[in-house]
Amino acid sequence: MAASLDARGRLGQRLLVAPALLVLVVFMVGPLLLMGYVSLLEKGTYGGVQWDVFSGEAYVRFLFERDFDDTLLFNPDYLRIFARSLGLALWTTALALAVGLPTALYIAMQPPARRNLLVFLVTIPFWTNLLVRNYAWILLLRNNGLLDGLLRWMGVTDGPLGILYTDTAVAIGLVYSFLPFMVLPIYTSLEKMDFRLVEAAYDLYAGKWQALRRIVLPLAAPGIAAGCVLVFIPCLGAYVTPELLGGGKALLIGNLIQGQFGVARNWPFGAALAFALLAIVLLVMMVYTLRFKRPAEGGR
Image 1 (cartoon, rainbow, N blue to C red):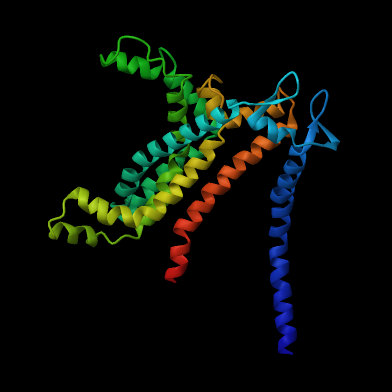
Image 2 (cartoon, rainbow, N blue to C red):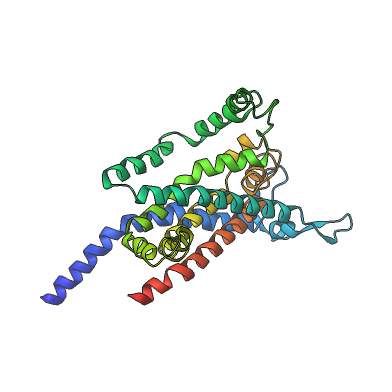
């Protein structure tokens, strides 16, 4: 009787999990397998793929190009695009951390009622579509726009700044778009902190920077790591913000992949580039998991 009840309980648990597993397989595992299959096919004569012709040419093209006599020559162009995207993602993550850490610390030090209001204000940008937010930044950053007019009125500048359609504009847009992903994890870590530890550090003649370095930052480290991952990964494959605020002048990974599936109609190469991007994302996630999850599990 007990064995029968246990079997029914296990069956009920599996039935409860089945819809989630079905969604995961259909909308995540299935597309990944299809993308991997497409990356191993030959490009069609007029675009698309030849579904019955296998080839690894898409992965070869990532590092090499073929000469007139069909010899392979090293081509670093796509590596430069990936390096540019990595650099911009790292720069954006650093800026988001520089803004997000003080913001999260300020929120965590407020009374509970005010904390809820401030967290609510941090999440307000998510209420607006990303496309609309980027168009708003175009109006702010364009020549003779709101920012130019304000700085000229204050006497700071006497001409257009020329920020729009530069890497600076892209970084500003990305920081604005993903800043809540940095603030909220850090705030979650700091909210649990006992600020009496900081007061004890002051009693032991520690300065503000010493208290920050030896107490606040170590306790906020898991939130900082989670925030950096949550900002870095979407910045790495961002498409909308670089396209609108960068003007398409500097090719990034997201724009490159879109171009292969769009104008170039080279689906196998686009799928191979997407897998290369996925490999970087998995590497970042693996480093984060090994660094911040294992010690927590060991502590339990």
